[in-house]
Image 1 (cartoon, rainbow, N blue to C red):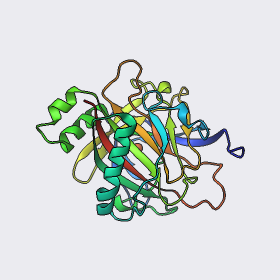
Image 2 (spheres, rainbow, N blue to C red):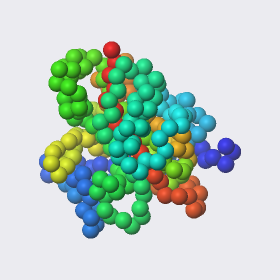
Image 3 (cartoon, rainbow, N blue to C red):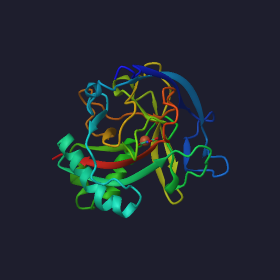
Length: 279
Ligand code: OGA
Ligand code: FE
């Protein structure tokens, strides 16, 4: 571990609001000729220090920082076929998340496989790449909408009366993710009122809502360098329990790590998104 950097310095892309005061939007699919996602807002680069938690994995938890690192080998390893992922990887992941969180019910509502392809601009659903922009996947409104969308109408009202969360289960595929790893912002350094801006996410057939993140010098960034396929990170995107300083979300982004060993294979990862309920 002695060759592990304690921290690295990298440039992250933050959000700046549209000048005309209109609600920000981002198109979910990038323009295939330019690679950029059409939007009405400008990214703003900021150079930050990102602490490497290798050897200190236990210093963060879902309810303090908003994320948690763990180790568990997945029985499913291929990640080449969506039907097989749903049949094999979803159930083992549900059990893993329930075991770690103590939740009574967990429902996977989608997954994304990302493979970095330098110079390739097509970011259509089967060709997703790492996301180089600080964001939170959901807002409060879109989290509640997910419960209505993915659970039976007879269950949703009761489930919404109790604590629920949206948690992503992210892990590398095939090889360690030294290339374009994921940085996570400690919730204790986020001002949920001041730093977050609800942003429409335009799908071809519907509209979702994510939180974009404005820069703050208070933000403290962390990552786990060289995550292996048998390691994972749980990323809390929403929690209905907002008292007691409980972490309710985690801004995150992929970033170019200056300490990536030369010749490292390009990043490949899968993230599952889960609705997580407590009796
Ligand atoms: C996520 C996410 C980006 C990436 O898992 O929610 O934003 O580059 N991932 O893996
Ligand atoms: Fe995300």
